Image (cartoon, rainbow, N blue to C red; front, side, top):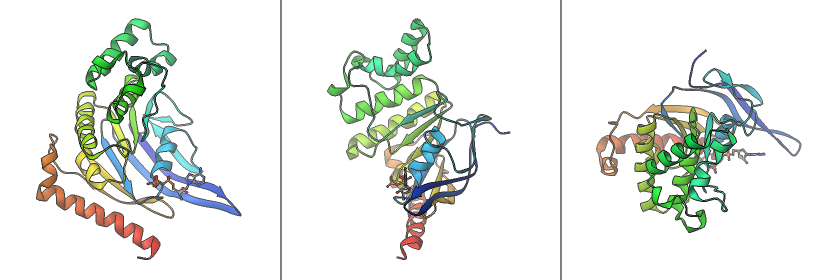
Length: 259
Ligand SMILES: Nc1ncnc2c1ncn2[C@@H]1O[C@H](COP(=O)(O)OP(=O)(O)OP(=O)(O)O)[C@@H](O)[C@H]1O
């Protein structure tokens, strides 16, 4: 057995009129503890489905998923999940949102308060502890959603297009923020994005999904320094990697649509 996240021979079929549609096939992925992996692929290649299987929101049709040698059979506190639109509880303050999972886990009040304070500091929202989500910007809401997921100290943080709804400037700020949080906490991250530039900037490894059925067509180690700044995205090395992956995504897509 291997610690970390392990998907072996994962297949996912969905029922459709008159039969089933195979959305994922032969997925073998191994993510080591502390690794940051991005999954890219054309729209409909099965990225979100893959993440929902890891989250335990749906079950694979075939194959197995284990996290630190425990089979994934449903949602659990060992996996923190953040979606595109940072779903927060509107009636709970920022601190109340960050502490929500800790209440479910029955973490004692003093430890809960300490953890909430630490994660609020980490995401730069200490001053907003008593604010309701309705008063926050989109970027701030995503920071709260990430802090809420991290506060339970999951084995893996699962992010589904977390910055897809943000404007360019906020998105860049959030990318810098996420790299810092990842480096500070050492959390394993699996993130789905359609933005190849984002994937290369954030990840240590990028997996490219092919469509119909979704499968891992190729993967690339991102051989860039651990300390990354936004200007690094203009270097020849970065642009080279980005171009290769964009071509892979495009090739996989056109082989399906016949372009
Ligand atoms: N619950 C479901 N029932 C039937 N089909 C589904 C279901 N969920 C997803 N699909 C189908 O599975 C395929 C993959 O969808 P998925 O959302 O995982 O792709 P994606 O790569 O995340 O796409 P996007 O980038 O557009 O979000 C699509 O053809 C979609 O219609």
